[in-house]
Structure formats: C-alpha cells, structure tokens
Length: 258
Image (cartoon, rainbow, N blue to C red; front, side):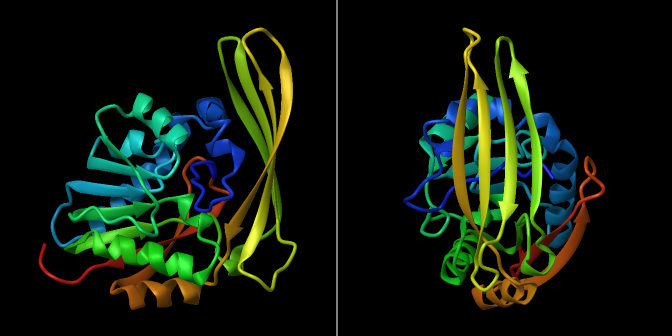
C-alpha cells in the first residue's frame, strides 16, 4: 500500500507534516495512488442513492489521492497542517483547501460523499474515532455515503517494514518505515521513520520521525459508524499496485433521499 497519505491529529505533530512537509513530493508520488483511487471512487458511487458530484476529504494531506479523484468529483480538501495544504495546493490548485481538524470541523454545508483515507490512523482513541465519524455524518447529504480507509484493523495488524523514495533533479529522499506495536492491549501502535534527505548541493542528512497511530477492531469500526447514524458495511480491498497486500474499507450510507 502507498501508506504515506497521512495527516496527524494531535498537538504532538510528527515532523513529516511540519518542518519536513516540503519533502513530501519526494516521499510519496501521486502516480502511486491512481489504482486505489479508482477503487475508492467506485465504492462511493455504489453506496450513493444518486450519482455523487461533491466530495469532502478529511485529512487530505499532500493531495495525492485527490489528484485522481478530482477527475470525477468536485473536491473540498481539509487538513490541519499548513505545510501539507501548501503541497496539495500546488498539486491541486483547482480544489478548495481548508485548514481544519476532522474531529471538530463544521463547514455548515453537506456533500454527496465524504472520504477519509489513512489520515484516520491518527485517531488514537475510540473517542477520536467517534468524533471523526460524527463529522463525516454531519457533512454527508442524506442519500450519500462516507468511506473510511484505515491502513490496519486490529485483527489484521502485523509488524512490518518498507522502504522507498524519489528524486527530483538534484534533490532526493529515501525512507525506511518500521511499524510495530509495543502494547497490544491498547489502541495504538508505532510507526518509526528514518529519512535520508539529499539537498540540491549534494549534501545528505538523516532525520528520524515517530508517529503514534490508532488500531481498532473491526466490530468497533462498525459499531461506531452505526452509532454515528450510518448504515455500516466493510469491504476487503486488494490494491492494484500491490496485490499481495489487502486492506479493509468501511462504508457508511446515510439514509434518506439524495
């Protein structure tokens, strides 16, 4: 899985979304999201009473998934990080960008669909997750649908490592990602990153970053979606670019006419 379209949801913000945000395009390429964006669009269209036009993305990050979804939807992109919003604006200038927290955002309008990619991983408590789902329900038009795509549910989590990166002229980035769970009894796990950053002058420096992410059981996802007001369902997905990996998407349908 691409696994990098992430947005922090705490006051202890990882460096990736703050001082290192300008490096995002060298860490996560928009082209890597093309196949999975098709899956997400199809799920949203299939869940709506009428063909959807507007989409609110909560935790839009650098805008990589949005760069594909904007072909079929009118997008409003919300993220708490000014640095990541700047990256997304450069990639998606035709989209509306708003700084905000998915737990507390209130825009006083509704959308045909609401989408939350792996930014939802930064909900580290059940209350955080409940608030994000309430925000999605509040902004979802009756007859519309919300889609949540976490990296992991509790039942499928396994420690893992991955690596990658990109070059752009003389600048380049390489990363090592290590996901592990020091306490399986709580609702979080850790993702530690090591970055090697090559500047235009050829100098290379190393940086480290730790992310605390949420981990919840499938039944908890479905229960909270139902409590928020959605008709909830789960959909296993195999990602086109990485068929050896599977993820679990959660769809919430909001009853009523479109």
